[in-house]
Image (cartoon, rainbow, N blue to C red; front, side, top):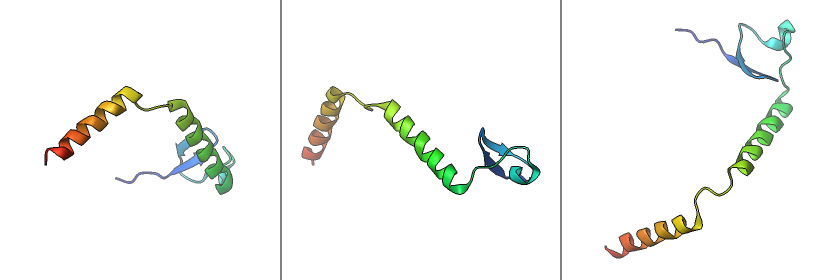
Amino acid sequence: MYERPQFLTPDGYRRLTSRPGKKGKKKSLPKADRSMALARTKLQKMSQKGAAISPEAAKLIAMALRSMLNQK
């Protein structure tokens, strides 16, 4: 089954029959703007996450790994 290609628009990805910039419905983002927008959203997501695990959990994992390595 043929799947129509996705094009990046200011609102996100859309499936269209042709390029949105040519039809004038929605203007597609230029390549530089697209990469800057993606980088900006990735940085925002990374900064919102914070620490993945607590320091106590990290210590427990390290102790478990050490004991596994010492069992050899």
